[in-house]
Length: 142
Length: 295
Image (cartoon, rainbow over all chains, first blue to last red; front, side, top):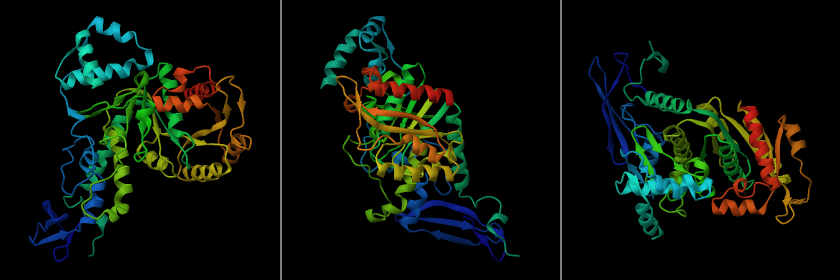
């Protein structure tokens, strides 16, 4: 979408970025030559259609956030709970904990490992020990 | 002189095009780490796409391949259950979201992992405040979500990413615009209705330039769990070969239905891992081998 200043034959520039007017958009464009201003007003349906593409008018493309469209668009979600900002590394497993894990069938071991890792990370713990596994089992069994 | 859209450089500051290009670049960058992206598709629902996807993922992982499984059926997600990847946290990092981990370490991304509970219906916030308007943009936001699943999941290095598509004719063509190397399997069953619908969807993919590796005929007979004898499941004999010939595709596999497969799907234990001697598993493993040869 582009706007042309007819008297100047100049493309207009976005001046104000997507300030919301109700649920629609109010975008201001300005001719760089004669400084004439125009506003583009959208209704809420038009604004929704653009948002559904995962883009915003005037948004800086460097402001990337993973799965931003999905995370901002679900009506009912557990996003706040399960998606955790995490800088914590994967917990380290002691050799005893690894031995206990190895007693499970091979194909479920990755799932069990992930379950314990998730629980440890949620508590800010960096090590999986036998004691932790016992406690986690009780806690997760609820 | 009147100027046309293309005569004006730039986009007036909206940077919509820049954002779209940036989305595509992120997706291409993520896909660089993945050997083969294979979509499991069908024009018809209920033909066993998800059961096939989960068992194929397990069969490939059991062979030592690094496998991811993307559940692109946003409204009826099932892969987290079938691959035992439920109730896991997703971790948000600056470069993406860590996927859930299923059996044999298969990396799984699914709408199931985002919804409040497993029986929560998918519903989107909308600016209009009118739920009846949703049909206008729902398809767009769901397509955007699948793009985000592909591009924003930290898949890491994979040999195979299997994409379980919802029923329909156009999904593979959409994915092919984003992932030029993607290929697909078309799944059908021996019912006349299914074959009618699947033929249409295969032709739609072919006409749009999508690449199908071949046809898979699922439920091609019934496996007796006691004696492994195979008897007809539908009144008609399997017609997969004839259908494949008419579509110019190879018939890659005819997989008989083993009732233990359904139980395994419910319990998150793919049949290929629990009953390796089932005739169904034999066919699924052969299919996995063919995919390796075709890759």
